[in-house]
Image (tube, rainbow, N blue to C red; front, side, top):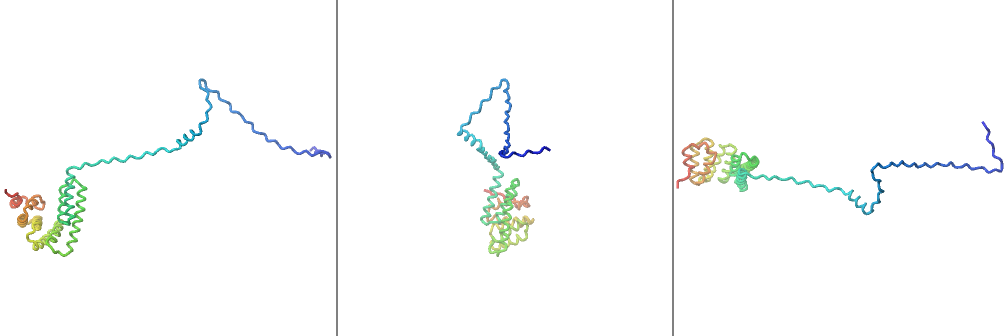
Length: 242
């Protein structure tokens, strides 16, 4: 290997030069010549600062939400059948509020029998029948002081099909009020349901004697269906001669 030469005395030591860092040379992108027939693009003018903010704000503003349309309600036009069912139900409700539970039960049963095509009305009538019968049962646990106490319990028993106990209470009621037309009428109905035709006609005759309007009620009452062909019954329910 060649030997390095020692610097001679008296000569200043040379400081090593810093290595120069070469700067990157910027290259220009080749310009693409415009197509034939195309107009040269004009330089974009700077947008006005005020207008730019307005446009940016308008761009950022959320679109208004559309409110959902309310569903259109189609009102049901009540039929004559429905109107009649409601009116009949209200009759029973008034009797119920008057605490005449026995007559209320009868009115509700009439609604069920005459309006079978109105399920909502029937459901309401059945629920109220249960409430009325519960009230009558509560009364049955109390001491019977009046003829109507026996009558109300008897009607509830008749509706439940317990005719024997119903007749027992009706007889007790008649002892306290022998001329009570509604108790006599109930006695006639209970005997008719049992098939006791002669007794049913006898009690019905007494009931009509004390209250003539009972003949029209008996004519429409299904409890007397077994007597429909009896001449004595027809004579009783026929309108009086003028």
